[in-house]
Image 1 (cartoon, one colour):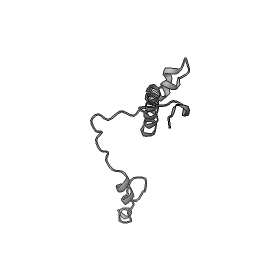
Image 2: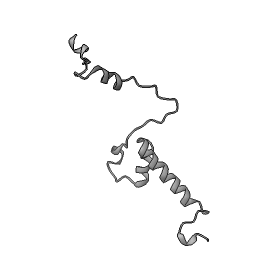
Image 3: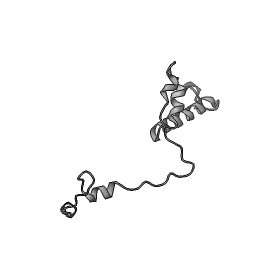
Image 4: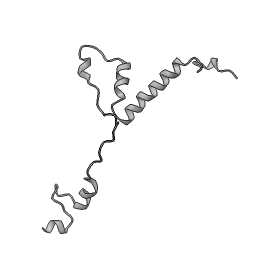
Length: 93
């Protein structure tokens, strides 16, 4: 085929060296990997979603949303820890 000699593959006319570099088989998902999924807003059809529910759902939305959820958990743990000063006035020199 003349197109193959020019580096044009059969997939949408893209050059075969490009499709070979980009279209690679996926690696298997590791055991214990957390499934990524979005928020089921249908569960909140009859009421407003709370911040707590939104942040909890972010734990499974992907890397950045999971990081926000983890940060909120750390902040909540710090707020619950009485040894961590809660106001600047509580810090001793």
